[in-house]
Amino acid sequence: MVNPAVTLTKLSVRRRGKAILGPLDLTLEGRGPTIVLGPNGAGKTTLLKVLNGVERISSGQINWNVPDKQVREMQAYVFQRPTMLRRSVRQNLAYPLELLGRPKRQIAEDVRNWAAQVGLTGMLDDPAPRLSGGEKQKLALARALIREPKVLFLDEPCANLDGRATREIEQVLSEAQAAGTRIIMTTHDLGQARRLASDVVFLLNGLVHEQGPALQIFQNPQEIETKAFINGDIVE
Amino acid sequence: MDDIWAGLLAAFRLIVTLDDDLVEITLRSLQVSLTALVVASVIALPFGTWLAIRRFRFRRATIATLNALMGLPPVVVGLIVYLLLSRSGPFGVMGLLFTPTAMIVAQVIIITPLIASLTHQAMRELWAEYHDLLISLNTTPAQRVMTLIWDGRRALLTGALAGFGRAIGEVGAIMIVGGNIDNATRVLTTAIALETGKGDFALALGLGFVLIALALLVNFAIHALSRTEREGTW
Image 1 (cartoon, each protein chain N blue to C red):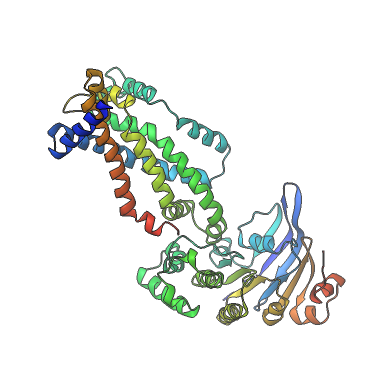
Image 2 (image 1 turned 90 degrees about the horizontal axis):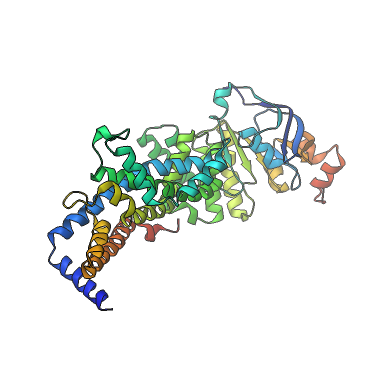
């Protein structure tokens, strides 16, 4: 299996004449989780959305090392505020597989398995919009992983969650990573970044300020702003 | 006040005795308006949803036109449909004038913009909520439309019922294209207009109460069937 990698060349995103992201030259490769760090407004979410094709780019290029046709099919995205379809938990989990035209029996089995994996078995027939924040995030994660994506984007998946819910989600992410899913994730939680990251991209004002192996970034950052951010100082 | 009491009594008597004429025109009213509702919904629901999710050059003008068409004067619609279906018109050969089909055509033209516009309003909000998810799941435009219609079905039901309300209470257009022919194209509203013209206010009021009861009944039935109230919060 080809390890999915992506190269951004002179990529930029502008909205109403204002630069949101870039110009960026960035390559994301390797098998371990890549964590995108940076203060609010740094462009973390925009970067993820651009990689997933949700956000349009203004200029530049994105090149995945797989044929264009497969790029969108191999990806899944978990948003910071998970969108719940106005359906039951079961129907939310089944939805991505229905889009792919999978057989009903297989869908039912996969839904049961993934519900069990994220601890939502007892809530399969509950309306998804009525779940708690942590349950919604777990459902969104299961709904993303049920398609067996090669690349999983997560935008602050544990924001506003308590320690237990965060641990449960990190456990699922570790299992997905072990199963071969490439994880690219933003977080504000430096502890979580240290626990999960294999590589780190530090964004500041829409630009890549520093990039490298997690160990290097956390122990020996080269840039003053990166060091300040990692030390918990306010970086603007 | 006497006329109202007399109307209530007339309505009561007509319903209790299951008056043949009342049953016939009531069933015809339902047949015409429900058929028009189904046809209009098949056109308006996907179109209104498509308008909510699609960006194109004249989108704003299209939406403005659609909203303006909500206020289409039924008499004018009736007149245009009459001219189209009359023997000298382009569709005259079909022989549809003064038939329930002509009445359905007129009602479809009247209520389609209303349902499409209400659909657009409801779907615009739902699309804003679902946009990123459906794009990230690589859905096709058809899948997006179907997903929005299914998940927004309760809001759409309200739009459809508004369309039904307009259709069942409409008189101007169907009078022109239907002709209010006894045992053929007479419906509750045209019968009320006829009885009022004849000065039989009691019967006209009686039919009016039946019409109101019918509209309420259909609304309650559709809400009950779709379990709107029970599951309305999600």
